[in-house]
Image (cartoon, rainbow over all chains, first blue to last red; front, side):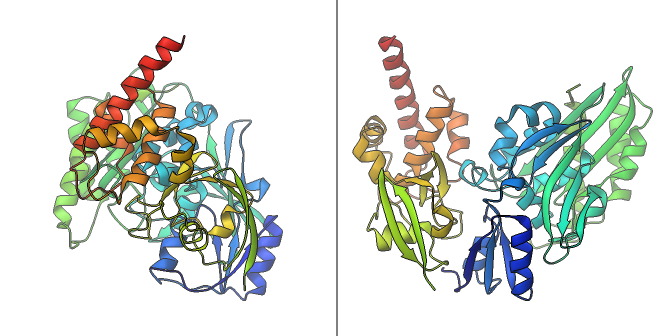
Length: 286
Length: 162
């Protein structure tokens, strides 16, 4: 399958990219790693007049520590979540999730910003972003703003990024003392879309949960915080009893719909099994 | 409208005029007749079109030729001519790790990148590295055997060289 014809512009700055987008009257698409956009063109799901390539804009790259935040440029490749020492140290849940994202060659090219902006509800990085309370920095023609991940993902493939705006960086609060993480997913084949996935970050003080953040994916139209399960664990030791309560609470948190692959109740069941596994294998990171 | 691009392919500087929708795979196959890069699904699923872009395997069907401008590409022809995968090719041959050969150039890219990053991979790690490469002939076991054997030989050779 071949893409329809389009014009191409390699933007040298965010301002130039936004100007080009505006001049195309919105009949344009931004390109980062291209691993969702390019197949969508080949499948003729969209046919923009102009493609604005953001991949060589210097300010979109780079990973740096800024006070209590790790800043990851939106153009950072998936593979860097595995190999970059700053991400390993300060955003270890991204590192834990990255091997589950597609396949090695895809990870060499796909970008963290692209994955978040694409907002596929079955994808790993958006769920991680929610679990670790990331803030997303969005450039618009009128200025720059930061949106918490909880408010960023709005619906399937829909985020707080308005047409023409550009996600330029991901800000991650650095781990605090007692922080633990867990990540896992259930998929039919390695690298395939998860039937259900879980990203967990918690803070333990003297073995007691003082902060719990559970973010599930492939369970709805966006990454889903399991608020009732979090409450069930708050102030408790993580043991069989508290895990069972958290698993039970998931029926209040999830309301998946039946889909052609399997019924909704099976997804909730899988989420319970998976949450049990992840909570039993939390890893201390700070 | 065509765009002028310049890139390095298998060590040679290449200048071409391409339409923006032309994929890197189509540039290689149609314009340059480097047909060792195969096109299966053209949507990033099958792994037949993998090439090295700036030293790392990528899907040539998902990279636009215009995006590759200014970058360095190595195809299976380049890996073949340099001799750097000669042992891998020999092991694939000896263990019947290919039948129709459609997936093989992509397998070479994934295997070469894996062994560069991890010289002594377990069978599970090899399996994981090949998770994005479809083979419909072999059932994969022979491919894993061939890569595993290559890893062992390279480690032995590296040990002797020291």
